[in-house]
Image 1 (cartoon, rainbow, N blue to C red):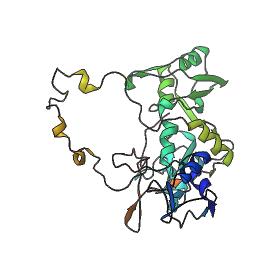
Image 2 (image 1 turned 90 degrees about the horizontal axis):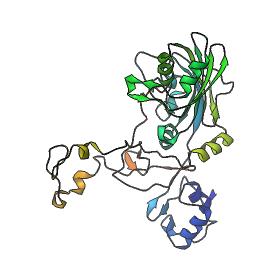
Image 3 (image 1 turned 120 degrees about the vertical axis):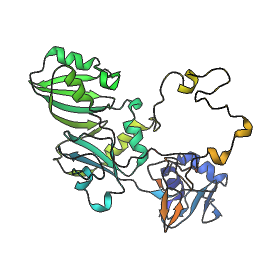
Image 4 (image 1 turned 90 degrees about the vertical axis):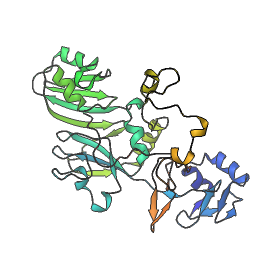
Length: 328
């Protein structure tokens, strides 16, 4: 059993002060009865708790730190290669997904979770979160190489220049590199630009989470202290895709009175809410996921660390299933 105000605050409905105000306003019901007292004891597993007639359901998210070995792929399943999920019990393989990825030849820290929202907040390039790597190259490191890596490298094949980053020589052929972006095989491409070849690449840190002495193939729970600091770091992070700068393609090519696609402009009479809504139906969490219980689509559960669910059928989710983009 847990106090109602704590349950609501942990579920993201608001602060303790906000929650108490909403209880006084009669906006919270427990088993169809309007809640009167913040200290009312509730059972998250059995009681039906509503905020403005919308369900608030408790769910515990889990977070694991995994040392990915070289030679396996960051995917849930692969017909040709061993995957990171093969190191976990079968019961976890469908529910959990890695946060970001490491390519097949790389090793090091991967965070795995069943909280889809945190995946986007941590890995969006626009959120500028740090990832730290220890890199071994095939020949001695020079000052010019270190300086070149740190000040942005043009990657013609990706049509971009890398952001400036922190680079430190820590051995004759070793570097410490801290990135705030995750382009496809970024570190390997950066080194190749200067005529170096990466022989070993180990990710040792993602934000405040450090690999430490965890052996390849082993995993452990994220500690409460690590979790608390991680939540602080991503509190203001976006979980939405970074929008491209400049005018939308349709506007760049648009002639007066015409759309960029050559189709006629829509008027108010053309608007069809059913047609323009997302094609999926049911009840969705704000992170876009839904769940089924006994064959019935139910509102997505709310993490005790998460946010309050608002039903919105126009929300679409960027899936984290299967392979993700290689980022180093």
